Picture 1 (cartoon, rainbow, N blue to C red):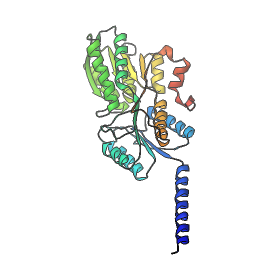
Picture 2 (cartoon, rainbow, N blue to C red):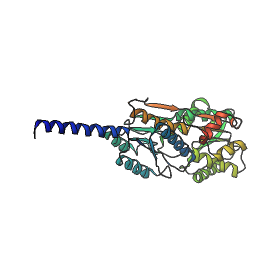
Picture 3 (cartoon, rainbow, N blue to C red):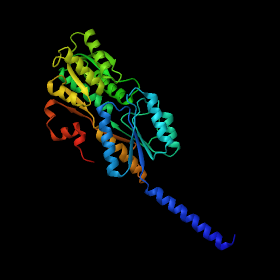
Length: 322
């Protein structure tokens, strides 16, 4: 091969490489967003925020998760399948803090950035963690229930599931705040609802039966809250047993209006989904987001429901892209 031919070949190869790089650079990025589950309104609100971010920031959103939050193996399968597809980024809410460690570490080894949202994991191989300060949210719930009981009484707690870091932090904040600040409020019973409203209702009824004269209940997640409210209404205890619930659905909002629930501690799942996608897009553009981004929680009473900012928080479908 002559020198001229070699130069032309080299120039042609360089042109092809430049063209390939240009095509890759202009290709729309794909972000897989994988929630703990898909059956509760909280996750639908996260999805709405993620999709809104995808539309505004020009990235493709793949939304996929297990139906139930206790399907740990199914979530691992979904994450692994997204890694095999070589998505550009992953946003994951871990159903169990240890279960996804190997998958997240593998994604990092392949150069796929991972944002963890809502619930933490036992690895540091992620870009950032976007979540409610759940310990603080639990503290807020304890303060609210103690206020409703004037600082004394017997209560029960309908917990979520073992191994879910977000709700475990929330419950820890609740229990530790009561122990430190409200010694007159006694936790008489606690049971898991296992992310199932029927099981949560049964747990609440069991504790109400075993502890006659119970003064209050705290439910630490959406299905636990719905189950606890159903148990209180079924027994005609609305207003008698003070219920502080967590998260918001149409039925929980109606129960707040009707008096079966005294207060809701509410997160901003729409913002959480939006921010999770935003952090990955920032990474694509060479920016490094903070290792932790807190999304605030709010205590809502029935008199707050007509406030414009609360309406927007509770009805994410009315929100425009941030």
